[in-house]
Length: 582
Image (cartoon, rainbow, N blue to C red):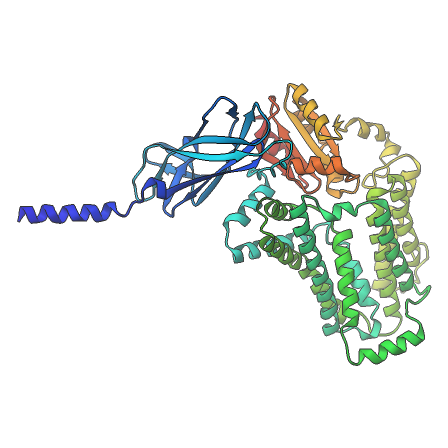
């Protein structure tokens, strides 16, 4: 009986042992060369197993090469029975290792990788060392490796989310991100464009027509975002940034001016009578012709009006650039644009039902949309025009409509509530426009504080600016970082970047921020021209456009855990810098 029990226990122990995988099966390493001086070691980790972050070791055979400091992605915190709280990796991990070589040409590399992991069920393996081989290409001919996603910044985290989350979870996340972006300046200028299109329909406006036109507009925007995003990810640049120059923006603004003047009744935009007759005949067979024009307007608006590089867009582009998964990245951008367009569809439906169908009120609504279209034109060209010209344009755009709202006319004694309301709006517009006009003529260049110059603050504002040194190329950047001998902050800026100017105006002028940055060498890359050097600087750090801020330690090494993409206010920026300064 005792013998039978021992035999039974023996077979039970064998069955239990078979539940745990051989470490070579549980942790499968592989290596590839990213360029002539960088390799990437990846592990496929079986379900229910994990690897310790601090147990990785890398050595190389031979004397012609040495390995630099590996770059690890962020892992998950795990409460380990043996080591306490540690950082571990599940499913997959990719580690980038720089290689310092003393010779050029094709170089075979024999690598020894050491790792240690455990099973969730409670079994831990001793350190495992496995040999791997890879050939490094000639650094002179090999393309530079795409920078690893900085897991500490928001865009890097989003790129990681795309990589590890499920397909449908990704789409839900990006739709919600698009809804968030719909509240930013990237989308707001599209509202008067779409509203003006619907207002131009006059008595033809309806719930159904408003929905169809707004849907066509949003689909055009979404298709453009997806196509531009995929192209940007595959080529390493943002297409819309190439369109941010005075000629393109000026031309597009001129289109809005022409459309707005038609709203004011100066002329009617219509085809010749003979061509109208032919199209009228064809329209009985094809009702979607007008929708195609609105679709194209949405596509153009996405490229010209919405060049913002917010974290969701940057994260998707970063993921596409690293993995080449254009299907998932493009789909994510398409869904994000649908989220951005959801409020526009709501505006279209409401516009179709709320706009008056006939009478003087319809003319008033059309003129209001004409003013909004002019405002959009000024907003478009403001980043590439002198600040004084921008302030004068806003002043004129506020003062003239204020006069039409009877800001200077006396109201009759028994005026109704709405008349008094609109007169009040007109007075506010008149005073604001006058402040902008006086401020511009007195030397102020800040539209948010137009009268600061009258209080003697214009020079003080200039003194509050951070003392950035401009860098125009990768070589100049590397030289300045190498010679700095102190932590470095690199800021990517462009004249057409609204968020960059917000950072400059509201964040970099904060006394606490300036005090915190006192120990940093401040460098700035102006990528307004979007030339070859600008693109190389952006590609070096995996950025697709400004604003972006990169930090380096006193030894000149990038601090990958802290990276800023998009606007941050002073309080949020201070928290980011605190991580760098310790």
